[in-house]
Image 1 (cartoon, rainbow, N blue to C red):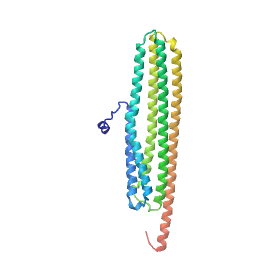
Image 2: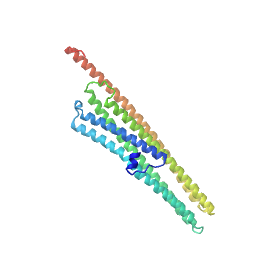
Image 3: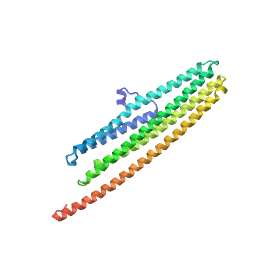
Image 4: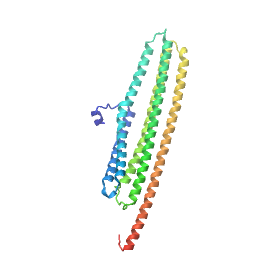
Length: 289
């Protein structure tokens, strides 16, 4: 956090934003450790990794590291700026509503409510796009991890069985599992942020209703407020859909965990076959292990 402050990023006071920033920093640290392990495997002469495969593995890890690092800039520059602009726009709209005279209040309030509806639609669209982007990144990361693990299992099956707990493959599996769990937490944080925004919109509608009541024109704009409430109900349905997407993402994580377990079983079988073959060869040549 101190390093980000030195680089010119303002740390938001919102607790959800702070938790999200801490989560992204943990993801970057985990990705960096994973990149170091891959580089070590590629530089190890005993691995016998082909140049093309080494280049593919290194570039994939660097791409993942850059992807995680870009989340910080996106968090503090784009999303925070959008929220600030949205808050300023809604504040300006309320200020204009207070200054409106009783003669032209009805037409102005109608315009303001239409603007609020437009804001709801834009915000819902932005939330959907962010959710789709996160899902695409998650699917891409899962596919890449599965492909790399298959290659590692095949490569490791041709080598002696490691006897230490510092196996790079085991460390990679642990880091990948933690990263997926952190991405699920990221989606949950986004869901909390959506709850907060929905609550803010509801408070805004109630405040607008009170202002209209004070000016004596509540009956004239009741229809418009009803439409706003209907739009809020629609946004609530979209929010429920986002919750469903979150559940689906958790199911995908469980699927990936099951695939990891399957890969581990295949690796153990390959280790057993390698041990049997090695014992057979040693027995034939008269060598004792």
